[in-house]
Image (cartoon, rainbow, N blue to C red; front, top):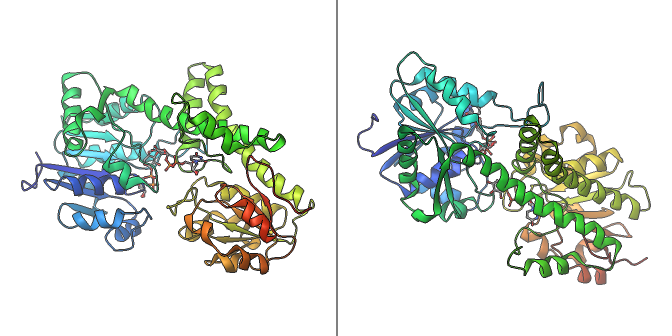
Length: 462
Ligand code: UDX
Ligand code: UDX
């Protein structure tokens, strides 16, 4: 039983990040009958959630937060109190790739998850449902259930897996109209009851036929596999972009032609500098680690190649830059248009721009970074090469005096800049490397630029 009888359910979420914050805001907005509290150990983050300057940039998020905050949506650092009062606890703490010990570089680091499980045991006084929102290796729910239920208070914890499929930049729309909601549980009576209790939450706005229930391991694995399949499409088209650049084929034309095949479909076929984001690489490496741990080496190699192709694409891009800029970029200013891993977010986790900047800095270029939302994160990411880096919030200022512009993020505003003005203020010959294929290459070439798109012939003046 919850403490606050005014509300039909008392739900909390531990971890107020990119996943926990938007997901709970959506639940609270859709279900005013539930009390939703989001807790985090990071006091600055919680203070930001309680202000008009949310800790993450996500279109539409502030409106949804404002609609429910103070009514049935609360943000707090008092983790123990929230746990004590909750009937349902979503856990959305980070599960980064391990950087040490067994499985370093591949396996998930579960220390925050396990610590959270122990905090839950400590503060609890009655039975609870624990919902895995963090992406976790298959079978984690089982391990967590053991830790949770090894308590001497006679309290029962039922663990269900409810992976999140939202993509950053479109999180609010994804939460509003998800392709599917997936809930995995034990197939015992208690497990199925817990599952139904989570189904009930989403059924407030998601049609029942979009709410899938499975066993807990299928749910855990499906999250990794969904991300692996999405990333695989990008690596596949990126591998073809390399081939197109050497032949007379054009990667857009190829993508359009294959995408019309309804069995393939047209989405996620944009050749790019490489995929970034907190999930794709981490989840694939996790899948690789799991396959290896079962002795399935061919399966592991197969999925690992998706990540290797992504690394190759970033390297290849920088190699092209150096080659065409007369084999030296030392001392040259290079403006990076965009630093976020995709448009409409300030998130820079695993952004290809990080690797590209570091490689350019190693070649002793001066890298000038501009991005409408990600400058603060960029500064933190680039500490190791900060002496080679400058920041300019205005893209015109970033490009002034530069030898080259490289488009790293597909922000819409980069399409409508006055490139004639930019060209006039740049060093000549002026280069544009379009790592997102968003600009009008022919028009830029007419202005005077040497343009290097991905996966199609370059537009050169020499
Ligand atoms: C996280 C995981 O990275 C991802 O695997 C999972 O799918 C969803 O949750 P995200 O929300 O993007 O994704 O992570 P992040 O923005 O880092 O947020 C995690 C939050 O948990 C942080 O605010 C952190 O302070 C908090 N946290 C972490 C706790 O409150 N307690 C802890 O013990 C550890
Ligand atoms: C992804 C999944 O889409 C989401 O379902 C899951 O919950 C979390 O991981 P996210 O990382 O936020 O979401 O963004 P996504 O739109 O998938 O893009 C990931 C990366 O792939 C970005 O760097 C993006 O620019 C890149 N990308 C995407 C391409 O390079 N080409 C494409 O065609 C699509």
